[in-house]
Image 1 (cartoon, rainbow, N blue to C red):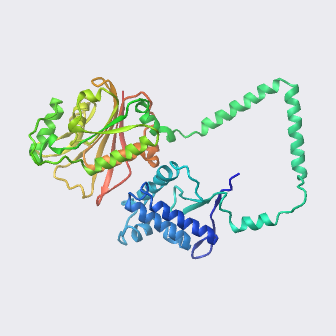
Image 2 (cartoon, one colour; image 1 turned 90 degrees about the vertical axis):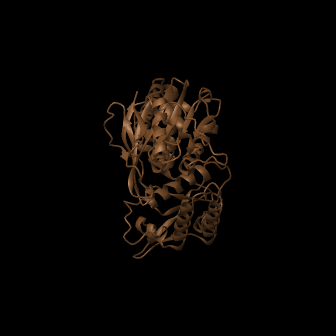
Image 3 (cartoon, helix red, strand yellow; image 1 turned 60 degrees about the horizontal axis):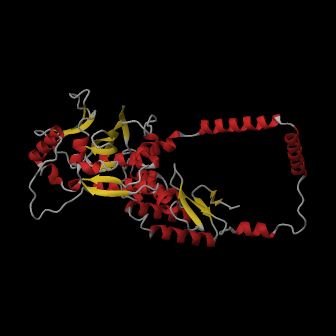
Length: 436
C-alpha cells in the first residue's frame, strides 16, 4: 500500500515551520524546478512567480506571507491599499495553478513522482505528498524498531475474525441473507447518490452533444477584422448590416494586409482546446475568412469571437439573445428579442477596455437547423467577457456557477457578466439562462 505522507506543521507564536528531512526538502525543490521548466505549466508568468513564492515560503517556514492580501502586495506589486475583493488576481492565479497542476502536469503523465506538490483549494499553503519511494526519517526509524519475533493478533482482532467466520456460515445456510446483502448494497448506492455533487459533471453535460463525433471538432476563429469593417462608424454600420442581412460582407482588402486574430480569442481557443483534448476529443482550428456554410454542415463547431467573427453574427442572429452595436453612438449591448427595447447589458461606445467597467457575454449551445449540427458560441461585448465565458465552461473552479438544468440535449443561452477593475476581470457571474 502506498504510504501517502502529508507535511506536518508545528506551530508557535510567530510562524508555521514545515518539518521535512533534508532528502525530502531536496525532492521538493527538484520537483518545483521540474514543474517551472515544463511548457505545460510555465506558459503563465503569473502562475510561475506565485507558485515559486508559495513553495519557497513553505520550505523556509515563513507561511505568514501566504495570505491573499500579502501575496497581492509582495508577489504582484499591488500597493498597500490593495483590496483583494475588488482585485482577485491572487485567487484567479491560484485557481489557474491548481488547474495546470491537476490537468496539465500530473494527470496527463504516467511517470511516478517522488513528491507531488499540490495547492489545496481554500488556501495558499502548498501540500507536499510523498509516495512509497520517499520515506521520512521517522518512518525508517519506526521500521527498524519493529520486533523480530512472531506476529500475534490482538484479542479484539481474533474476536472480529471469529465473527466474520460465523457470518460466512450463516450466509451459506440461509438463502434469505442474500436478499439482505442486496438491500444493503441498494442502500449504499442511495447514500452515494445522495452525496453525489452534480456540479462536478456540469461542464461535461455542457459539452456532451459535441463529444461523440468521429470527425474533429471545428473551432472557428476571427482572423481578419476587415471582414466586419475597418473601424469607427463604418465598422459599426457594417456589423449592423451583417446581423440584419445574415450575409458576410465583401470588403476589398489591401494587398499588404496580414490576417490577425485578437489575443483574447486565441487564449479562449487554447483553453477550450486543452479541455477537449484532455477528454480525447480531436480539434481543428479554422479561420473565419476560409469557412463556408458547407463546412459547418460536416460536423459540430465552436464559434469564438463576437463582433470580429461574422459567423457568430449570422448564425446567432435569430436566437433570443444576440449582440448588437449602434452605428451612431457605437454602444454595444446584448439584445433580448422578447424585450428589444431593454438595454440593461450594455457598454458605452468609446470605452477603453483597460478602464474599470462591466463586460457582458453570451454563451450559446443549440442545434442549428441550417447546418444540421450542434454549435457552441462565445460572443462578448468586450475582450474580458470572452475570458470569463471560457473560464465558466472549462475551469473546474467555476463549475458550480453553471446552471443546474443543463442537459445533454437542451438548447440554451447563458448571459454572464464580469467586473473589470484596472484591466483585471472578476470571476464570471451568470445573470440569465434561456432554454428551449
